[in-house]
Image (cartoon, rainbow over all chains, first blue to last red; front, side, top):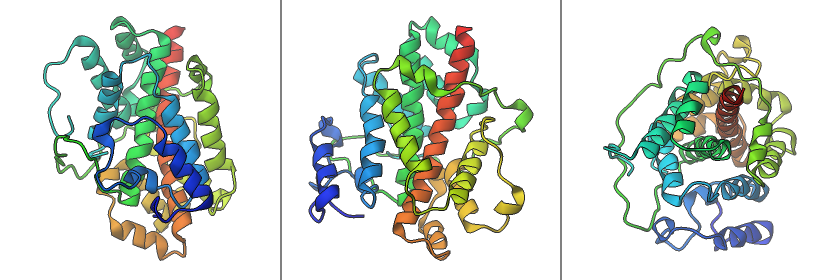
Length: 83
Length: 226
C-alpha cells in the first residue's frame, strides 16, 4: 500500500479527492493517513476512484444516515468484518 | 454497534437488519416477500433499491478489507469488534433452489447517479486493462457468483478449479472472507502474481460478490413490482 504522504501524480490526486469528501468524525483515523480501506486500493488509483464513486453515489438521503449506517454495520457483522 | 446484538429496534430498522443479514449471508433466500416486508414498513421502490445497493457495496468493501489485511483504524469511539469464531458459511443449497436472477441492473436507475458510477466501476474491473487474463477474471467471477447462489453467471468448470491456488483464494474470499489471512495472499504471490495482480484478484472477487447480491436483490424487487 502507498500512503498519502508518499503518493504522487494520479494517486495523490485520488487521495486529495477522497479527503475532500465528507466523513463522519468517528471514521477519521487518528494516524492522519487516508483510511486503510482507501489505501488498500492505492496500487490502482483508477480503481480507487471508480469504486468509491459508487459508495459516494449511495450516500443518498432517501434513507437517514443512521439507517444507512445500520445496513452497512449489519452487512459487516454478517461477514464477521470490523469494517 | 459492531460486536453487539441489535436488541429491540423500531420496526423499520428491524426490517433493514433482517434484509441486510439475509442478502449477505443467505442470498438465495431473498425473494419478493422480503421486498414486500420493506415496502410494508414504508419504503418506496427507490429506497429499497438503495438498501440493496448499500448491502451490495459493503459486501465489496468488507472483502477488500479482509483480502488486503486492512487494520481497524477508526479514530472515534466505536465499540470493539467481537469476532464470533465462525469457521464456515451457511451451507449453500443446490442450484435448483437458487432464486431467478433475470433482471439486468436497470432498476438501479431509480437512484440517479448510481447506475453510471456502478457501470464505470464494473467496466474497469471486468473489461478494462487488467493485470489478469480475461479467462482468470471470468473464473474468479464464476466462483464468487456461485458462492452467492447467483444463477445468472455460468458456473465454474470444476476441472479448472481443482488444485488452482487462485480458485482456492477466490472461493475462500467469496464464501468466508473473515478467514482470510496472510498465507492466502502468500500463496497467490507464489503463483507469480505481483501486488497489483493480487489487488485485482481481490477486487474482482469482491466486486462479483457485490454484483451478485445486487442482481438477486433487484430481481426480487422486479418480481415484487410485477
